[in-house]
Image 1 (cartoon, one colour):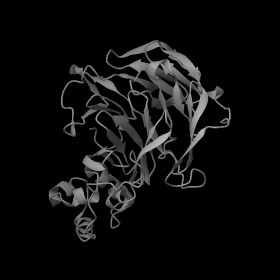
Image 2 (image 1 turned 180 degrees about the horizontal axis):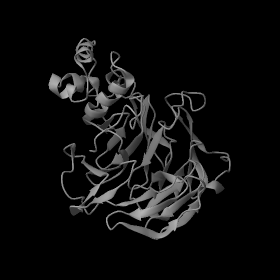
Image 3 (image 1 turned 135 degrees about the vertical axis):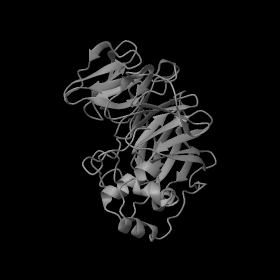
Length: 352
């Protein structure tokens, strides 16, 4: 992973460690969730936490097979000394929980939204450092990537999470305009209640909270979840999620299951039947992910960016912590902190 640097000047990781940033449904009934400073892999039918790993500014984008894909927010490039290596792209082996050390694997996609000035954005294939066909997108001011399909074929590229266009990454053309999806749900649309903070009025955290959007195109049918909490199949509302906010969401590769996550709960939904397959309580994670109270926020931020949790940081020798520029007094205060709880090995089911 890339180092977290210059955090005294510019913070790249969020300040609320318990808030989810991104999520993915992977093969084998596994859910990968990126929180403020940590990714954890959960077997969602049982709630078992398979492993956890620290992360910094790179954001989880998707998965393919046993690889999860992360992209740095501040650009990607080929290594000038080894053209087989891409910098700014990271692959995590879900089987072992280890980061790729070597050439970027061929099965993983390398097409992303890149930006020059804030108003300019285009699709780029970073494996060959070339722009995708039809590079420019007409989705408004300051467009960026908001979501991608599980097969990485389609990218939701827009300046707003409820507007813009879905682009075909192979052809570089817009294939679906989301701004046209404004109809209300008709009679008989199934409502699926979610657990968590209310969608309206809960604590907004600048750009840390995701918009809870997801796209997929299984068997030629468009499936889109917009920030209004409505799941559409080929444009028509099929399900409406009520109650809890959706802070991140993702379809599985088949497009038949939908993962919905907020800071309180993880939900997995059967799309065709509108049934809640699982609901796991994430609230016990928050105490284990808390910032160190004895340190200035910048140092606490840096500490978790490198080690994921306060418990993991405190397990390090003093020399490792001094590398993060903690002085003797700060180190002594940190060692005097009350022992933080560990990440739970099992998340309790609260739903079906």
